[in-house]
Image (cartoon, rainbow, N blue to C red):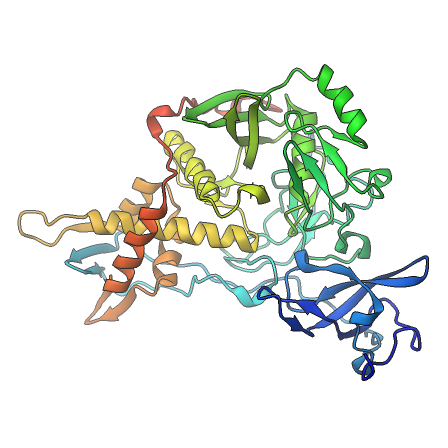
Length: 478
């Protein structure tokens, strides 16, 4: 402390940057550069809300003055008004429909007619701290008014009615609202950059939110926000929760149970028929999804909630939302596994379930971008395992090398063709050799895949799925 100037001697204001002491994952001290987002006074001292530059926002926290390195204080600079670039770079593969994968032992060969172009379709991690974009970057523009789809933004939501969309020809397409949580890259409102809920009690779990969520402002000063784990209603005290539980008859999410195997169930919830539940689900999800801004219009969406069953009822594990009608083949809008259930295989189970629905619908699907960092990791892992499973199961045909097209892989898995290609590139399997694209499955890839599959105990059993897709285009306003 003697070498560091006291924060009281210099007026530290919002926007200042300086090194701040934090414990890393190994519980060692480090002094990363941080930005002061807010200052508040409590009896006897000041507190500073800091965002560690180049770290995920979920690590933001209130710190005491003794954790600030005042010797390296940087005051905020006055920004010149310059036009912002809203478009994000990207590329779209333009390969013909008939690329063929030939598999021999540990190698797979991709033959073609002419020389197809495999543009770099790899996920660009440098764009962001928490999201990425794939496809042709397009300028954002305000959301036009749509008849029959009024959307209200809650106060202090900090979102905008604009979004960057992918477009095959580089022309800005009409942005859409997504899963009642829209993509949000602006973060201009300082309020939405700060966690506003300290703790959530949901059933037997206490959750520490990672990000801002627009719960009513009067609830943000409470030490604990109580949620009914079955209807997700928010309450301000344990007494209110206990009183609510005597009247709440739900022991599972509303809607239809469309899958059950063992203790795992999935419920399909219509965002129009079960509006209050869907809105409460989105409020909870926003605590753990930074790259979305919450909107209250849930009518155009379906919500698929995964639960674990015990004697007390069906407890929410995670969910994904999905547009009733998607012109871009999105089979997932938002996806989340709640923190107590993360790193246990539930994320991949949610993803696998979304593709099982696509198989029944006879479509290929892709998740809507941007994905969160954890969502991106889960999808990459799922795509890799699913595609490698198919390539390694191929057998020679009458002594000839077995053949499979990119389209075949896409149809078998319901994974969109672009995601198949991007995964092969991410795994670094594609090489160009003697006029052919060669997919080389090295021993390391094969062994790594086998080890991963041994750990993957949770799988969707299609025989336990009872799902009939609806044609929403014939249902007017859903």
